[in-house]
Length: 307
Image 1 (tube, rainbow, N blue to C red):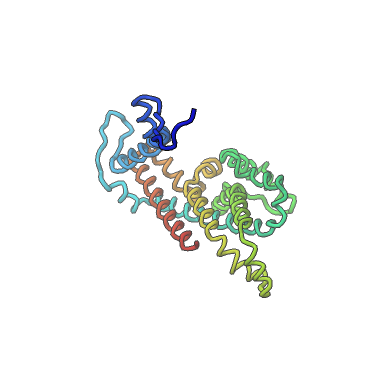
Image 2 (cartoon, helix red, strand yellow):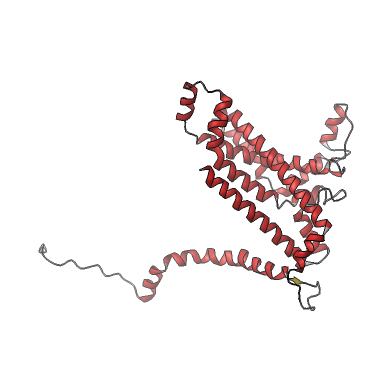
């Protein structure tokens, strides 16, 4: 049976009642609701609690009410020598470890760019250190650094060199932690730099070769500018992670010897759980959060300028 060409077209009637129509209109909100609830429970609520705790003096006795001190916990940072030591150690570790990881990762990526793309097994092996749990890495390096039976001192002995305390020596403890961190996270830098090199356009390099530009000139004039966004992201991620270093220090040195490896995360742990000063620990945590936000904002601005 055929209908007339001039017959009016009628819109199909959607089945379902009021509840179905309401769910269809608010589908995006309903899809995001579980994630928002998890974010609220795991991030927003603890952050509000931390801000509230940072302006109070909290007694370990739950029957004692919280005492409002305002900015007192933050002003205490200015005169706390242990905080200054932890801040300095964190800065030294972050700058040294991230710089070494970036230079090694970029160097390895430049050297192996033409070969490693075809060697999937090699890339898998290089990913193993960064995939290991931090505690497993710390225990492994604790065994390596063991003064009497450690692998490193055994190598030193066979080379005719004196054995070292490594993690137990005040002059070598921070260096030992940096070496362990560089071993674990250089593959992360390497893979990011390798991915960046694989995405570079070919035409500018061909034009540079025709103009007689050397490999060094091509690196500074082409490779570095093209890689700036990748470099900014890699450095940002590693700096944010290095600022919260805890596992390696806690297991290898415990912050010693003589507070040479006491970093901010470990100091926050000690203040909160050893000295039971939750309010002051929350203030130090907010300081670390503030520094992280400032560095992240600076990196993001640099990345926009590089585009």
